[in-house]
Image (tube, rainbow, N blue to C red; front, side, top):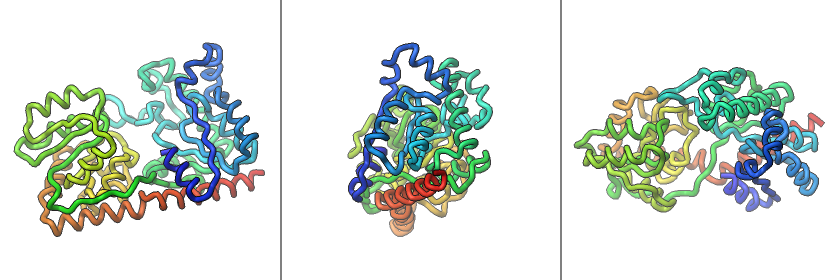
Length: 375
């Protein structure tokens, strides 16, 4: 996504420079440096010095942060603000209120932690299954939350859904600093009704994605459900598909294979049991004119689904999810085409590269305006 947005901005005539560090860079540091980073609670990441050098060399108007941890930390945002830059942060998950980033534990949504209370996440070892690493992440998130609320930094926070934005407003972040901006995908090559059949699931084969529950609930005599992806539940998915003729597993697909499966299916099913963030597959499905069926909870209505007339389906209600999917699959050409057009219109309104570029530039203008007022 970062590479795609960099290309969009560059093509529009803006000068963009990327500073990218990985977790491996952190692990290559000495134990003393790693400990200092952890003790600082994210205020002094090893990447801060590199950022200072980049700021002096590049002299940007705006610094856009994505993943801060472990190499940058909230201190990097402070450095950019001190330099006079507008600061922007994209929130790709729920890390501020859940150190795992998902608000999902033991097969269900978990809200024991909040933006000011992360004890349970540490006790359960929610970050990478380690209490030590969970404590470090909790300290880093606490430092970032203080920066957001006490220092009004970064200048603008990008949320990928309205649902995520509302949660931050309820937690005390001024709505003027919160912007909803979806990511973009390439245009598709939609196929007509007669060249499509069945349903598909594309994604990580993990507990929070609900793939096993979907496969179990799918009728044995129903239309074809095709599952593609990889993850810790792969063996279980393969075993289940071997015993149910209506469900097939096709393994891991490359990008072209993913698009072909989407455009040849009559519906994409997103049975996630956690609060999703408009997954890439949803945006791509809309670009292919493929209706998307998902649970109602936790996603904005206009980006959740390609079928605008879908009834509300409560989180975890697999029977209703399957019934609605079967209904869309069984629609005749004319009715299904209307639903498909709804998905395409969602893509055109929200997920094109032009929409993304224009929204980004508005965010940067707002960040520069707030930075100017701060100076």
